Amino acid sequence: MVCAAGEKVESGEKVESEKVEFLFLSEPDVIKAGCTDMSACIDVMEDTFRLLSLGDYRMSGRNENSHGSMIEFPESSPFPNMPLSSADRRYMAMPAYLGGSYNMAGVKWYGSNIDNRKRGLPRSILTLMLNEPVTGAPVALMSANLISSYRTAAVPAVGARHLARRDARVVGIVGPGVMNKTTLRSFIHECPEIDTVRVKGRGARSLESYVDYVRTNFPQVTTVEIVGSIEEAVRGADLVSVATNENGGIETYPYLRREWVKPGALVCMPSDANGDEEPFIDGTWKMVCDNYLMYEDWRDQIGRFDVCGTLGNKWVDMVDEGRLDRSQVVDLGDIVRGTAPGRESDDDIFWFSIGGMPVEDISWGTVVYRRAVELGIGTKLKLWDAPALA
Image 1: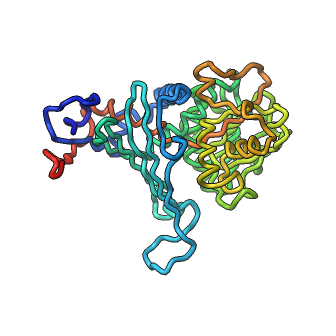
Image 2: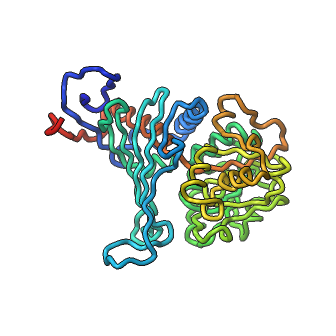
Image 3: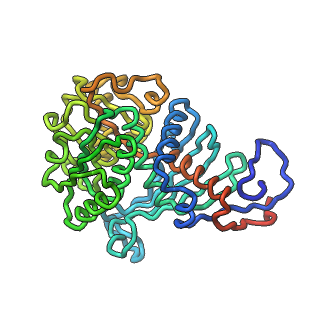
């Protein structure tokens, strides 16, 4: 039992009221509470990785590092109302606890269907529930599309903070969607000399939208170029982000070749992607991931790289097969905390695998929620004055 939303309850502490209230935050509410403050989000993500390195967190799964639990639908069904499998159709719950100054549990819940765009809706529709970690009582329910979008973009920015060259100017974008819009914003925050963006996509509409976005929001970018191939986007780029929605198996993953990648580049992979193996094996390409244990969980629960195409899964496979040493793959949190080296040479090439974790939603969502409480934003909802059963 807890008091009203926002009051902290210590383990074993007796509370004066059995009433449980929580705060509802709509998308306009989370914007007012600072959800789109990219600078603050990057700092929070950096702190989140520090806590991961320390071990002050929990996620689900047998190894306590699961990305989440997903409902998948069949190719056919005798039940007329059951959704059928299609591109990016999924329902997923992503629970976690994060310690430190956050000390919050919660779960991000979402449904995703690429056909939503035909209905004028985002591909994924997300909510985040935050819970007091001792009692489990809810403290906030919030719209999470922007929470998730900004925390996702802030992660490659943490990578850029620790791994990119300070004089980075050229960005190669593969996939002109929402994820790469916010990622570009975070790159520019960390590397303010960026003045050139090359973008590879498939649809004229999404490419035009991306170009308009860059020209409207980043006047310092003097060159925005639509290119016809992944190679053209990658060659000469100081920063690369690959974020596409390929769902056709390993042969459809965007592929980057050794000779395309510039010395000194940082290549960020927040979606399925692939690349030549030899530079990983010989150490030409340094490997960094958000959480190696999460990729091991994916291997055990979903499958290997041919069906689970985030690059970290490729590295787990290569370690399992004896073609890489586990020590070659470094967690970003260890670099943030200073227990593993980051950039040591201007010519170092880093590949950063980003799978996304619910602890990131918990940390950024907690910061936004607490800011909303300070500003008096949101709507209080009551679970009960006193529980009917206790």
